[in-house]
Length: 115
Length: 117
Image (tube, rainbow over all chains, first blue to last red; front, side, top):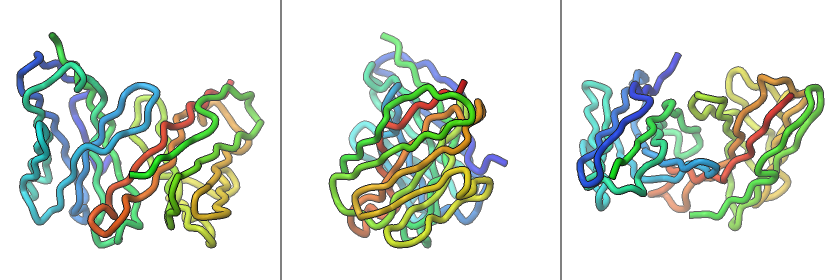
């Protein structure tokens, strides 16, 4: 059973607009969440993360929002740029593992930025 | 973040054969992770490899099928044994970020794209 779900396989956004990628999780033990970006033929690249003690984390054009009660997080990219076109993976883990736990990933959302 | 090199980057193999994938890191790391991404699926953790101890496998993965070596703090191998077409996947290794603030962040190699005929 998928513990991390990304229900939109793809998303098309116009350049300069906001891209919003969504992720839901079912395991209440997850308390640390990450977003990765993946280009074809490359490994996933870490983008931004958030701990469950926060509800928002911002880094430049990227902001992650966490709604613990809804078990939902989202990644906002503003403004969207052509280089943002990639597959975005949501991942989760348990902070209490001290980094020894692996990451549980969603299936990814293919973001396409249109000129 | 660490620089992670994987070899080979891709391979096409015959069923019944085995392939060993290498992962080299440019710094010493205690823990290395191996993942698999089957076509259209998410990345799934195969095992965690600590230097000096046996790898810890996730449910659904066994040592006979995916033996792992971890001879030192910068290197690990994953072998995909007795391959079948269902093993066609991208195999990725990863390491944790340095320091306590990055302990939950993992950094990935480029992956090995395996096709089994």
